[in-house]
Length: 328
Image (tube, rainbow, N blue to C red; front, side):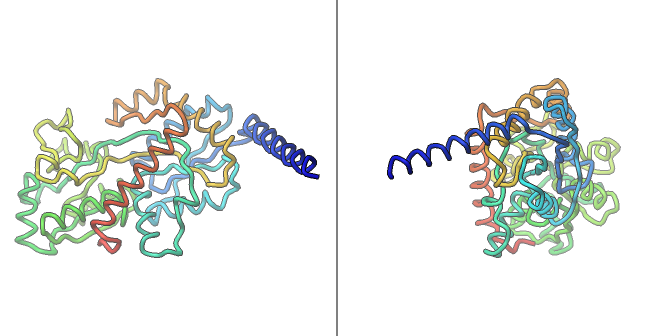
């Protein structure tokens, strides 16, 4: 009887392995959807639209990008979780949405748990570095001036972010807390919304990528008070970093990554991972890195991708522990 049981277990295991291999070999059997939780025009949208074209060449199937903005990426996430977990619907995830989802979980234990419902496929790119941009009328040339102005006008300085509880929002809350100032938060739907809020003067400052506001900086409508990167940017050598301004821990580098439903077969995840790594080496992606100050995040294997994801989650958890889950 024991021999028969062992034989049955071995046969079942062999069948599962064979099925998984067949699934991976057949994948993809149709178009792949990349769902993004932010409006068109931002860094995440640009990254995944270029990558989609390269993936189409690698996998031999159409790769479509869909923008489902709102709720700091939660709408897009729910779309992915409601789809069949077969690898044909992927999440174009980023750090802003990642931190927001963790805050939701911290505030409500019954909320969607991103660590259980999602699995990382592959990181795609880091950055681009964010900057603290301000309208030209704001009487501040740097962070020290901003702090002095905010202290003299408590509750009157308005800052825009790409979404409540996202990375840039938490960074600005951390800056306010450490500087002892009070500012009003105006959450927007992505980087494009920040630019609109600044252009309309609804907001005075915003933490946003340089690529989003470069035109407005060049024509003098906006100015940059500081950059959130380890070193000064090549095209903004006269603008100090937040570290130089006395806030070394403020300003998380953005990241962009592929995530999938956690029930997606591992063999399919591995196939997507390998296809992504090949696409990331393409000439178009390398050109995108140079043009936007993005940094490649190529991984040697999926184990490295999992380690990367865990490290980023730990970073966000430390930030959330400091600023709290009710940050406004």
